[in-house]
Image 1 (cartoon, rainbow, N blue to C red):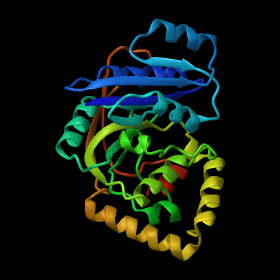
Image 2: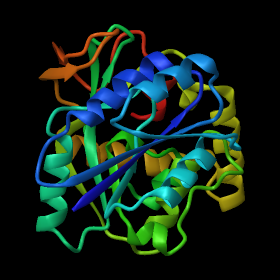
Image 3: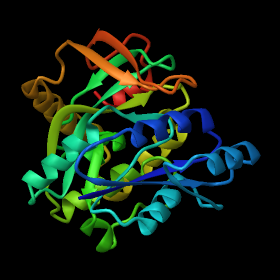
Length: 284
């Protein structure tokens, strides 16, 4: 089995270095390619890219993050595809776990895993347990799974299911909604697979994301308070039954600053965290 991991990049070199390290140290009985698509970050990025050999780097103008990801998918040659943003990292043994799951479950087309949200200093602040997303909930509310812990089989790209580049912030939700409505089969692996860094500038927390989400809801007919209340209540009930709201001790090993090794961080956390803003309500 071969993995193709795509990373869209633009002016985030410090984060990117840690992201690349978290992919490079994955080990197991699989092949791996890491494809970075950079939209033109400048001389410092070019100098770094020429000195590293764990990822394949293309520097060319694009039409935004989702266009960069699509270009990476088109360049890829793996059996299992995923994308990992610059401010995200895979946890140790992630790809080995995912590889074993896909090999044992050939009927699964899409796999969602758990993620740990960390603060800018790398401290765990929230644990997000994945449950199978429902198209109605995606449209009426939001996508509750995270792209950092989402993996798909190559046939999804080979059949033309690319990300919609007309959106800047919510194309991942539209993509998953489309895949589920086209009867691709999904499962969840309830183990922590990746970290998502709460930077305060995450695209999902911007006015652009809110505007696009509202516009998409209206276009699909899934807007309205009662519809949102129904799907939100159903989603929260499913999460409660799955145990997603419980408090748990969590340990992560991540790259931080310019260190060349993973540093262990641990905390007792739940799904929510103090000081959480828009992200809290969107992924409740």
